[in-house]
Length: 70
Image 1 (tube, helix red, strand yellow):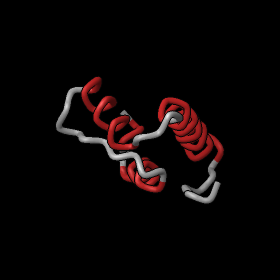
Image 2 (tube, one colour; image 1 turned 135 degrees about the vertical axis):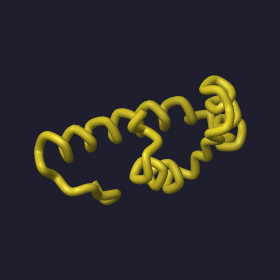
Image 3 (tube, helix red, strand yellow; image 1 turned 30 degrees about the vertical axis):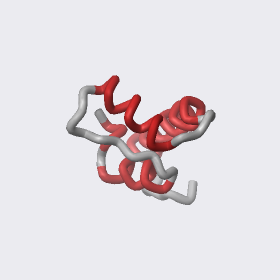
Image 4 (cartoon, helix red, strand yellow; image 1 turned 90 degrees about the vertical axis):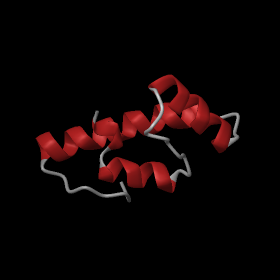
């Protein structure tokens, strides 16, 4: 589950989304949504997952360096 490795955790912290890794996945999402307290939680998470996945592929297949600035 590459979305929760150290680089990704830094991205989630930057977005101020807190995941409780001790919970089941649905409970983890609900708890993060409640603590984030924004109507745009779902959209932000979807875009962040897409960006993390895209950046991961660029790093693995394109030789791009890990960067929070991209």
